[in-house]
Image 1 (tube, rainbow over the protein chains, first blue to last red):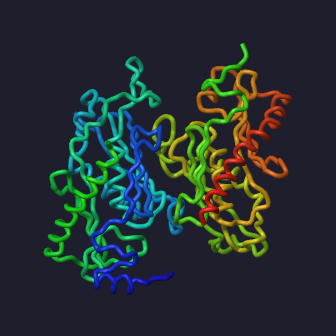
Image 2: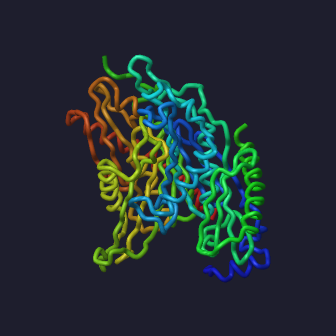
Image 3: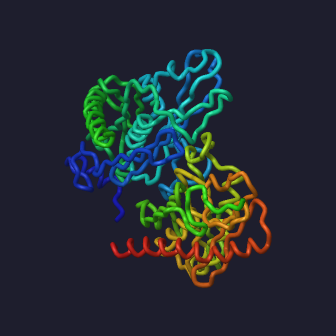
Length: 263
Length: 233
């Protein structure tokens, strides 16, 4: 079935969607699986409808940066695997992958979700550095929200590896019981504007029909830690206000979904 | 002191616990998951689809293109930089060679079948798990095949030929050889053969003989997973 942009847009005007969901309803199922990779320090697999992403946390000990001698660091990377979508090709990261990685990165970094000072081992010398890799397994739309959920779940499930006291070398095969210093739990929610309506969790097909989108990362108390507008159509301040209300409500929903799997 | 007791307590011809699923990636034309011990491979097949650039097209036969990749967090040590390296390129190439003999390329002239394998966690035997996963994904995609391919690494650890080495065995402090093998089911021909380490000719021939039974076990699971998938549809 080939459904064009106009159909999706006309349906949205009537508060309808192709798959029968309401505009502000996430797909089912939402599944979170933890520790899907024994080689990662923490890992997760998140499914929202047919969108499947994995996230893996790797830790390493590096020299501290000169401007932040008392801190470690965190970085988020994203790989849009050609395995996950017929339109993705092997090669250097596309702008879509770079944007995804940077938006998730900012949501976590700017919320100060990981206490970077606690990652410091010896000030001015060495500290732990955290890299979160987000990997798409099946891209059926709304990668931002799925990736954000996967990144948070992976960080929450991560344990430090042991360090040989004499050599300082990391023994990745043996994890400690110590978790990462995660002090906030930011989650991104992306709201899409289609034909002057706001909707959440688009499928890949619906993503082809949006006019504008706004990703809003909020932490546990609703504080906004990252914003990213996409699309070529403008948004009014009034729309942005509505979007943020909706995003905060949906972040609470996603957080409660995540909590079901953390027990 | 010969190697009689394996590191993880398996019998010498015993494979690690396996798991296989078909149809794990909805976007793909064919897909599969294959787990061999702690090595996991996801495979997706896209195509046959038009091949670009056009000068690569062959009006007599199609082309298959394997892309093997380990996820950044899938190595036993540090994070692996994404983007491929010499090793992943070579594995992609030998996988192509291992699979092509059973694929009827004449069925899709001018077209390409793209094959992607990505591994979220590894513990030796990654190319074998990858090939076994891909063979299922190809069958799931309905690509015409003359035979099935199943793959296991054989090896010799301190004088004993064993099946399906894990990482601890590959790095056992003695003379070790690691021999990834892929075999056709019906004709028992070898389509992948590599070796590193040291081994005598008689021991190698013994490993090749043992590989028949080992790949047969993989085949049984592949067949079961495919039947389960098609029974559902």
